[in-house]
Image (tube, rainbow, N blue to C red; front, side, top):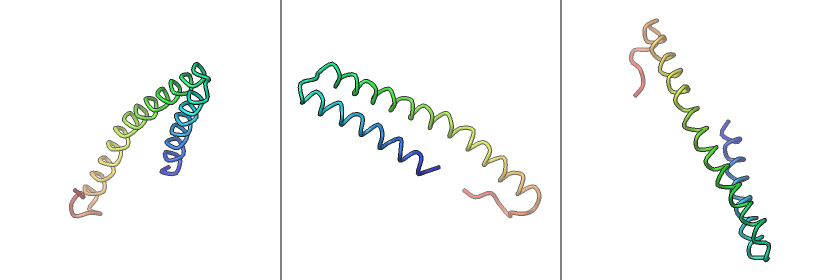
Length: 78
């Protein structure tokens, strides 16, 4: 799971770099399109991480609580 996040972060960075070099090469409209796409992907990744972290944290807390109630753990980790 962590490798996938790193891949997407590198993809966004590569797209932004391509946009900057395209602008520097004189193709302004194509460069700004790449930069726009990089910003859109960054926002989508950020939203996905935030939305995905909340249910994951709730599931983890639920499992810890069930294990503590079953006597498998003395206390939930902090």
